[in-house]
Every structure is written in C-alpha cells, then in structure tokens.
Length: 198
Image (cartoon, rainbow, N blue to C red; front, top):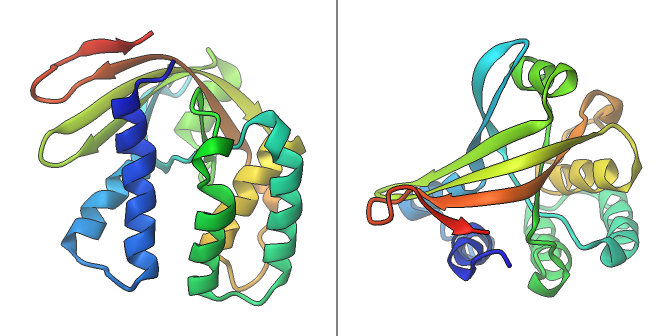
C-alpha cells in the first residue's frame, strides 16, 4: 500500500493548496506548494540521461474513469471560468476515494528528450519531488505511453480544465504518460533515501 505520508504530501496537501487558490489566497506558500505538481521526471535512453520538470497528477481508478470522462467533456464545453474550474477539479477530480494512488500521470508537451527516451528505450522513469525546505520523494516507476483511449483523454482533459487554451489544443500532439509506481524513497533530510514502498 502506498504510504500515507506520501499521499498526504503529494495529494492531500496539494488539494489544500487548490482550495486556498480557489479562495483567492495566493502567496509565497502557494508557489512553494506547486512543487508537488512540478516534479522532475528522470529518464535514460537514446537521448541520454535526462531530467525534465513536468506537471504530475493523479488518475481515477478504472471503475470511475467513464463517469469522470463524461463530466470532463461537459466541463470543457462550458465557457472557461477559473473559479468554476477549480471547484470542478475539487468536487469531481481530486476526490480521494476515486484516486488510484498506485499511479501518477503527466502529459508530454515538448516531445523532446523524455519522449525519445521512453518511446525508444526502457519504459521506466524516476519522478523526483522536492518541496523546500527539506521534503523530497524519489518515485521509481514503470511507464506506459498513451496516445489514445481513456487515460490519454483523462490527462488531456484535466490539464485543459485548468490550463484552458484560448483555442482547443490538438490532443493528438500530447501523449499521456501513466507512471505505475514500483518503489518510493523518502529523500528528505531525516530519512535520506530510506525506501518506504514497497
């Protein structure tokens, strides 16, 4: 089972940050809180050893995906309103009971080194989280690339619910990564690399 301390850090404290943002509370602590979203994805392959900062998110368990996709499609048809988008994410997407904590997701927006490494080489990556002053987790994963289907649609739709482009994006250009967690290490200043999962 994924450790509670990691879920608290990566999910619960992130949700609290989204709630503060929805309330208009955007200070330095909110910026630091975004580090839970912006992690380094580290790969090695044809493009060499690479680290790339990417937005990392969560995905619903399989049984909840169809309903989530339907609601996301409806939300993306509405005119964009940032407050409503945050409320939608809190009410429909960041619902603890629906999240599969054994997986993380991201979009490939650049299609450069990470893409080359994962597309042509070993389908594995390390996701490195760091939040100052001293919280850090190293999450080693097996990686799936999704260029269509429910995982791909979910990740693109969640991205566009908050980061709504003025014109609809061409999602065929943004594959999704599904990171299946194999190991988690607490790299904080107290634990200094202790494996906490499995």
